[in-house]
Structure formats: C-alpha cells, structure tokens
Length: 108
Image 1 (cartoon, rainbow, N blue to C red):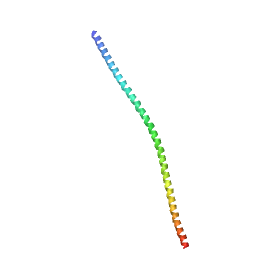
Image 2: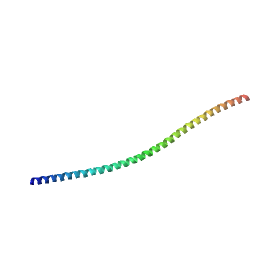
Image 3: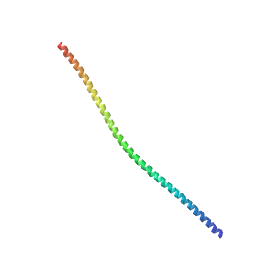
Image 4: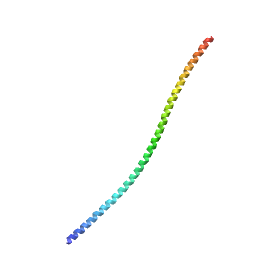
C-alpha cells in the first residue's frame, strides 16, 4: 500500500509540474498574442491611412487630368483659329497688294 501511495504522490507532483509548465506556455503565448494584436492594429491603421491617401491622390489625379485635357483642347482650338486668321491675313495682304498694283497701273 505504501508503494501505491508513493506512486500516487509522485504522479500528483509530476501532474502539477506539467500543469505549471502548460500555464507558463499559455502565459508566453498570451504575451505573443497581445504583441501581434497590437502590431495588427497598427498595420491596420496604416492601411486605412494609405487607403485614404490613395483615394485623395486618385481624386486629385482625375481633376488634374481633366484640366490637362481641357488645356490640350483649348490650345489646339486656339492654334487652329490663329492659323486660320494668319492664312486669312496672308490672303488679305496678297489681295491688297494686287489691288494696289492694279490701281497704280490704272493711274499711270
């Protein structure tokens, strides 16, 4: 009977030791979990900030690209109109010179 009592006591001591080791592992794991959760929240906050910045950049780019397109259209239209005016001015100058020469010839 004494051997049985000794065996029970040894098993109990070993069981308590195993339980204590598991509690220590659990405590270390809880620390790791807390650290990773904090890191996760930090990264998540950074992602949200980056998403907001990305949205702002997207809006800004869209506005600037629209203005650029308007400027390109205005430049093209203005150049075309200026070229038409220049061509008309050249024709007018040629006509004026011809008329002047014709009138001069009539006087002489």
